[in-house]
Length: 307
Image 1: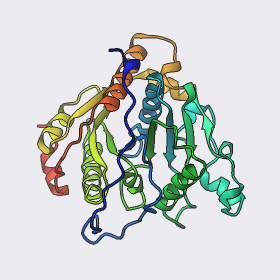
Image 2: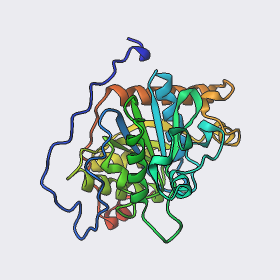
Image 3: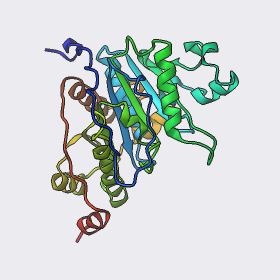
Image 4: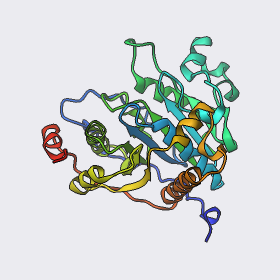
């Protein structure tokens, strides 16, 4: 069986009714409209420490899914709206910017106002965010998904990739987890990155109490070695599902505003593209869901480190 022979998934089942409870002790949650759900597509939310390469990972993963013949939608969840520029070759306007232009009258919008086609047919949306200090990113995510539903843009989509801003620090940044089927964490082989990954895993675990999101694995990025990552993964119960070492080709691809799949063939480009294709194929047919148990902050501090 070739990668292109992989079967399409059946429609995702509707979420079962569960008794509502707080996602975490002392939490004040951003609640999504229960009627606004992504019901058909496989939905992935990509998290990780700020600057770890989530947008690079998300865009190349989206490109890889498209290479498998899947209809892909990538949603950037960062006010910088730079998640999809390697796919579209531009900084596209955000959903919030477009909504402000029509005084939030969604009936005045057309899909082409905020959805842009990128490399190999990947559809790209930049959700954007409220002005600094004035609102919640969870609201922005909710409005974006609602708008996509109203225009039936999710009806024929196979894969949705949420590229989420930085570390999870509040319910707003965690809002994509209320739509996702699986969450992926990007980390490198260093203390700060693994410390952030541990807190992200705690957020995913909290959200899994009320939503169907589960931890789908971690992606090692910008690291030639993975010894500390692997040691930590074994301790909490998660696996590394892909590894991308430090590659100059990645830096060059960002400068060229291109995905790795558009770069001139070379040994490192070819290996990286093959790893993304393998990752996309694994996520498409697989259903790995890890019940990792995060450490307390002090435990992470004591656990990590070199002799």
